[in-house]
Length: 193
Image (cartoon, rainbow, N blue to C red; front, side):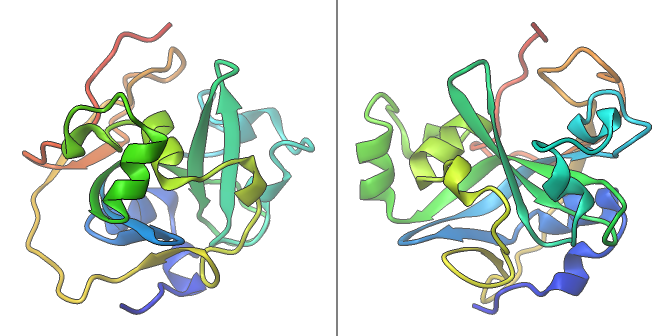
């Protein structure tokens, strides 16, 4: 499988969010098909961390495309985003869910409460825990190295479903959540807190 290069990410965030569906996220021995993403559009998107401008936390979002932005929510869950847009333009894609492919035993060790393989990575906090992704990966270049996105050996024909983003209050009605229609590994809709 070929690792996706920087030019893939150097595009509008929505294009990257849609384009990531069906690609393979790899971290060490673990991998999974990306089945759900959400786009966060930067300065004019009040749900995006970048809307507050450059801070120590958000600096990576304003940097070159093709890097990981990993942050902690609710004091307990880490979330993985991939930086899109040209250098200096903020935009990122939240990876919301994966369909596990390899390293499933390791994923089960990290998430012993998951009853089914399809629920190992069925949400942003679940997938980072199962994949062993932490804030230590914040800022890493995903176009090379241990944390990467790769093209599958053969791209399946998929139908993309578009919905409003979930789990947020601001700009929650924007249709920026993308998922592979009918995939059993996508996250479940929840009311924003």
